[in-house]
Image 1 (cartoon, rainbow, N blue to C red):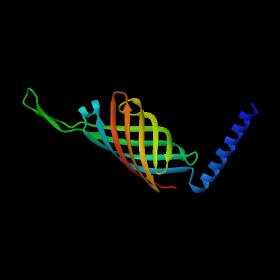
Image 2: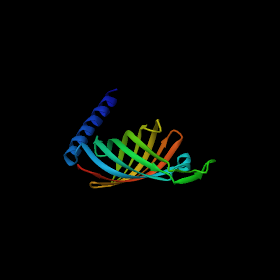
Image 3: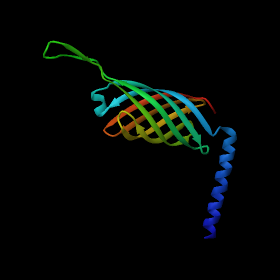
Image 4: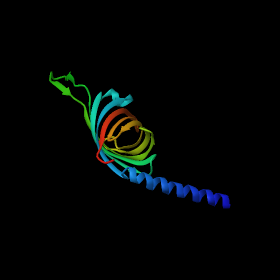
Length: 167
């Protein structure tokens, strides 16, 4: 029992030391903005073929390797324009368009300049909860990320470029 308590105490002290040392090197809370390319997959790709998004990104660094992440974003997704002639001889044009607001949060693990993360959250207009695994590359204040969103019956890939204002 003493060995377990001693190990727990040692790990707690080491975590506090690494966190306080890391806090001197990098800010705890960092805010950024990003632009997103939206690439529909599966059933979503039957109606829509492309899109873009604008995001606010939030990182709260727990230590050198782990952070709590949050994204608040807006995606505009469009599909190809189609026309059809109804029985009265009137031509109708259809241009599918959808706005999807995203509210996600999760954890990020930093491995040198490469990181992996997993977020979960709510996606409006789809009225669904979903998950977003991602991998990225952070170099100083710039961020390049690829992700794959799985939301109910819908899924899409995304590539984003971001800029973090702190650090």
